[in-house]
Length: 176
Image (cartoon, rainbow, N blue to C red; front, side, top):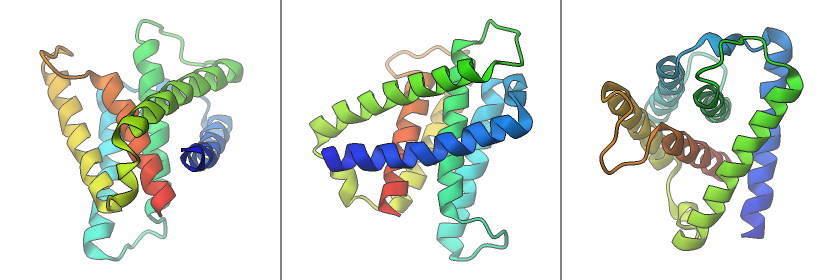
C-alpha cells in the first residue's frame, strides 16, 4: 500500500502543477461552467482515450496520459463547483484554489485507500482499457443523475462518481 500511496502522490503532483499553471494562464474561467459542462469535458477526454485505444493511432500529438490527467483536473473542478454552487464569485484567489484542490485530493485519496484495503489492490491486475470504459460508464451515470434532477434512490451521487473517476485515472496513469 505504501507503493500505491507514493505513486498516487507522484501522479497528483503532476496534475496539480498542470492545474495551477493553467490557472496562472486562464484564472478560474472554468467557474462559469455548469456541472453538466464539466461532465461533458470529461466525456470528451475519456472518449478520445477510447478512440486512441481502439484505433492505435492519433492525429493530435497528445497521448493518453495528458487526457487522464485532464480527467483528474476536470473532476476536481467539478467537486469544487459542487461545493461552490451557490457562489457567484468567478475569480477565486490562488490560495483558495490550492486549498480546495488539496482538500478534494485528500478526500479522494482517503477513499482510494479505504477501497484499496478492501479490494486488495485488484486494480493492478486490470487493463487500462477497463479504466477507460469505467470512466465512460461513470459519465453516463452522472448524466442520468442530472436528468433525474440530482436525485438517486440507491446510488451514489455525482461527487462519489467524480472521486472514483479521479482514482481510476490515477490507477491508469500508474499502470501506463
